[in-house]
Image 1 (spheres, rainbow, N blue to C red):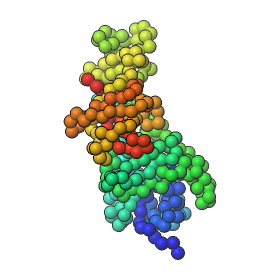
Image 2 (image 1 turned 90 degrees about the vertical axis):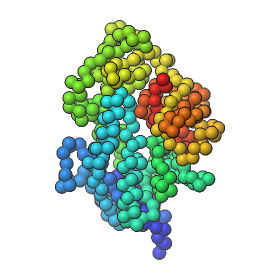
Image 3 (image 1 turned 120 degrees about the vertical axis):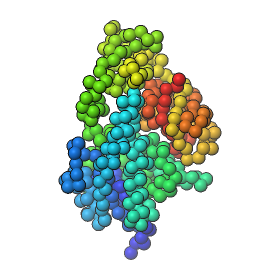
Image 4 (image 1 turned 180 degrees about the vertical axis):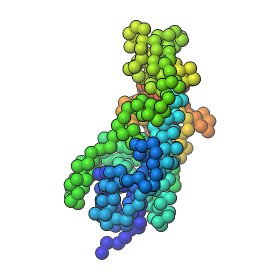
Length: 363
């Protein structure tokens, strides 16, 4: 009989990754308790008697097939009041938000840890493709084996009390290997599940349509605005500043074609400032709301800066200078393009995630 290593709360979405995580953890000897977080519904009114959506039903079925105790946490109101409201507020402030950065420490892991304490579980686990390692008394996230599935970028603000209790069994696997594990356990349908893409609560909508849906009077409230150059000269009009981000040129009605694109958003005056594509390259970046596992890491050599997850990022190394308790300055070896205020910025030494913050205009 296999020795039980301990009880662990596993966040189960009903998808391939969390399902295979359950299988691996069971095989490693853990007593796994599945918890599915119900964060979003596509209706504006809801109550405790609502039927569960498909992903929860799938998670329940899988937990039953694996012999797991399973719980559902209905956090729809808290998610709406905090994460979705943050998303809306950021766009209304002319910023480009990443709601996952707020959700991970402030809601997702918070609820999992609370349930772990309630059920006397030493650990929580997720299906993220990362590893967590202890180094000089601090826990650090490291990029996982599969570069195409690396999710560390969105996790830089997870604190030590979270990292010290989190297990991530998929960090040493690639996605094809994870699908093969599901097949080897006899779960063919789990292996074939499609990837979830984009922001979870937008259900593949364009964010502009989501803003209109959540703020029905948005067009009337904001209205059309001016597009100007850096001298303040009017070049054309736009549909309203919340519908644009830095680096965008689609949807701007210019008096004459110029190839210019958004370099700055003035939310107070509903104005877009336009510049040439090359002018959006920046060698210096200001970052607010920063967090590091160990502040001594900012003095290390060979720090790299990631601004777009798996997308286009500045090559070379970065020098970090702390300006005050809330802000720091990043000097890059090579320029970063079209940095938008509100975007997450993550810092690495090799594959080790050391911290991050939020991009700001470098005034």
